[in-house]
Image (cartoon, rainbow over all chains, first blue to last red; front, top):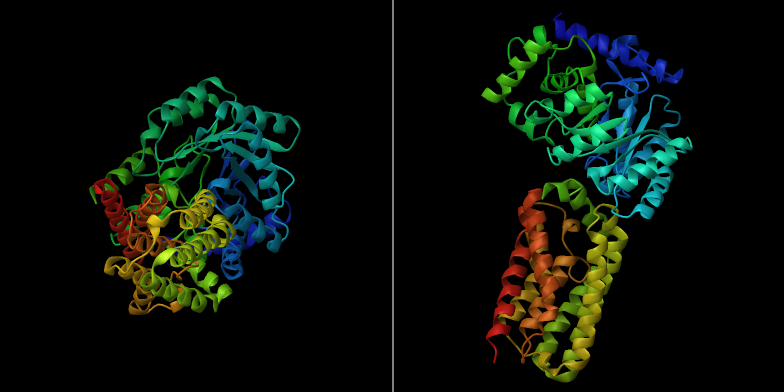
Length: 309
Length: 210
């Protein structure tokens, strides 16, 4: 059996173990069962290194059939050791669909709930957080983030107040598409925040220069969005062969593993959040938490290979 | 632009399919109302104007309230403000129809063609592409056919068009065209394209009129 085949069998077995572990209240999964986890610097709490996003993929409105299909994706996510689910009021009905799925699945102890405030109005931010709680069916959120830095000064205060009251555990800020990095850097240097979410993938590596090192220095967890550039990277790469050394040196037997392992192998990265509406793609994504990670030399080789295609 | 579209093309198409299913057989009623618009343009006069304007106003208000706000806004943040603007447009159209005899309709091939396109073009495209008819943008019940039918009716006006009635149809046509382009839905490009051309032409005709 090939190394990839052995890893896949272990992964599926680990999925069953992960389910059992989650059922036993496995928030701090550690590396038990071979699932890659990363510590949140401010607390030391460990979370799985591959979470899931919900931009577009979970925005299906009221359609029951489509909501049930997304619930199947959630089910696979948790079965394979999933933790962080990231959403936002900006994502249409995604929060409602996540909430629908969570209610249908029942207990999901490994859930690490992450959403955002997305409004220019300070008072509306409070309302929005309460609305998110109702939509998700949760009394507290693990992580509340200021979406795209919109009115971040006031919203961070609101989030901190809720954190002090025990309704939120961590505070964060987000950007995407490489935008507003200078402003993000200033906030990271001057504000006490727990998480930063930004775009970082094998093709968009601007954050390597300043933000990722700064996060490591300041003890800020990093969530990486757009790991596949909303599918564009996959569309470009899937017709191409993986390099011959991908499995041996990067621990990757699929492009999903190749791209995600590149991201999560950066020492400053806490979690990547690929979004998908498909159960088979969820399985591929979660497999990136298995097996070896590329070392720095291999990471450079991976980036060069993709650039050469 | 893709950052502004928070849903996938299949979910968007599914929205229209479910909406049409929920409203069936209203589509037949609104098509009959479209025929009435054309018949009224032959008649001409104040009564024809007021009835036509009221019909189109009903389309705008319904589409703004039921489609945009009640159904589409769950998927798309932009549907809420557009829904409100659609309702305002409907009220504006009703008032203009009640007060302005400049809008008295007359038979005009371009206007009639636009009203027919609003009613038939998208359903025909859906059928030609082998998709279920339920995916069609229904006349009088969904935004772009309402926009295009209105531009067609305004093109029938004997005395020129108040430019205030053109702003939203033109902007919305451009917006919908960009959305269809970004989502890769070529069959959804035709109505917005016709809307942009018709709206621009009516604007320009209004500037040229002494």
